[in-house]
Every structure is written in structure tokens, then in C-alpha cells.
Amino acid sequence: MAPKVLVSDKLSETAVQIFRDRGIDVDFEPALGKDKDALLAKIGEYDGLAIRSATKVTEKLLEAAGNLKVVGRAGIGTDNVDKVAASKKGVIVMNTPFGNMITTAEHAIAMMFAVARQIPEASASTHAGKWEKSKFMGVELTGKTLGVIGAGNIGGIVCDRARGLKMKVAAYDPFLSEEKAEQMQVEKVELDDLLARADFITLHVPLIDATRNILSRENLAKTKKGVRIINCARGGLVDEEALAELLKSGHVAGAAFDVFAEEPATENPLFNLPNVVCTPHLGAATTEAQENVALQVAEQMSNYLLDGA
Ligand code: MLT
Image (tube, rainbow, N blue to C red):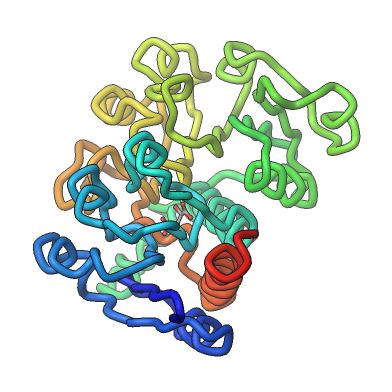
């Protein structure tokens, strides 16, 4: 009998087509990710579950998933999957670490420009017919120091693009070797050094115990006056309350956040502050990236379910 896969989040239809072409019996029910009870009632039928971020794969869901062999996350972060419970049940959890890295890096760069030139506020003011030409004085990126926290797949692309923009790049990443840093033409630095020197700071690390609150109140206080902070990685990396206070005091000149401690974010200490640019976790939201991750997750899950590879 063909393995059965449930797609419970909004995944590109490319994934559905690939599952079908590979001979997998696939159900595409993107609304189920937000309907815990309905998902719980159905999950027992499936060998594979393909998700993005809306579906929460909890211990309770895994308990009910008697046939489940694999959870495939179309994207990078697997923080919506209880991996300890999955591994206890022998359920493989896979992600697609490469499909959306360019798109996410590009969003970070876009956010850096947006906050440097106050583009969202200037746009809203112009739409309102105000023509406030003298209100929106920005800063150049050329020659400025970009502090990159995490120089892996996405952070590495951000470093490359920033070098192209003629920025000086200082990277803090315990896994970055001196040789690799040299190849990337970035300066490998300690976190305190980065905090003290950077004109812009961008985060590109996963949310794990070692990185949670990496920009804590204490660390934010070590930043250079006038710094602008960009977070397109994960909520929980930055103390949002402390950042809001530093924005109000003028120590931090701006912030551009795509991710928040609580998501979906309907309220947040950063909301409605001047020169804070916010987007609703759009880091991976391009046609290209969504095609890539859908294709990759469907191929990987099919390989595993059909060949155990
Ligand atoms: C990811 O982990 O792949 C990104 O944050 C995108 C997403 O969650 O949709």
C-alpha cells in the first residue's frame, strides 16, 4: 500500500505534485494546521506529515500519530516540533535548511535599508499627502560596520551582500574558523567587541538555550549609541522590553524586526515606536523560496518513506 502523507500547512502545490508523482497518497489540507482538534482526529491515518510553521507538532499529537514515521518542515526552524517526543516515538524530523536562505538574507538586507532610511514611515507620510521632506534624514550604509551574530548559511549570505554594499563586516560566531572568516572577508570578533563597534547589528542564529536572549538588557546596554538592530531570525533572541526602552531613550536609533517573542504578534513592546520597522515573519516569503522548500521537503520525505533514505 502507498504511504500516506498529510500536508497540514500552506505549502506550494509543487509539493503535492511531487508526492503524487512519487506514488504517495497525499492529502492537502492547509487549514488543519490551525485546527488542533481536527488534526488530532486525523493524524493516525498518516505515515508522513508535511508542515510549515502553523502546525504545532506536540507530544499529544505525536501520541495520536500511531503510523507516523516522518515530519517534514518546509523551512529551517523546527521550533514548532517537539523533537524530544518525536525521537522517543522514533519519528524522524527533517527540515530544508537551504531552500529559503537567500530569501531570508535578502529580507534582512531590505530591513537594514528600510530602517536606515525610514522608508516605511516616509512612505506612509507621503501616502497621507504630507510631503515631509526634511523629517526623514537617513544614514548611509557604505563604510558602516555591520555586526553579524551567526555567520552560517543565512548570516554568510548577509555578510556577502553587505560586503557588496561596501560595509565593514564583523561576525560573531563560535563555529566560524579564522580561515573561513578570511575567505568571507569578514572580521571574526567576540560578542562584546561586536556590540561596542557595530553601527548595525543583524541576528542569524537559531533560538536555542545558548542563544536565547543573546541581546539581553545587559548586552543591549553595551551597544554603540545610534546602533540599528535587525532581527529576521527568531523571536526570543532579543529582550524586546529593554530594546523598546533604549529606542525611547534614543540610545538605539532604529530596529527592524520580522520575528517576535510571541507569534502571531498582535501586541509587542516594539509596536508603534518611531523608526521601528515590523513585518509579520516574512523572512522566507518569496515565490522562489516557497517553491524551493516545498520541492525539497516533498523529495526528502518521499525518499524516506519509499526507500528509507
Ligand atoms: C524558517 O524557519 O524557515 C523561517 O523562519 C520561515 C518560516 O518559518 O516560515
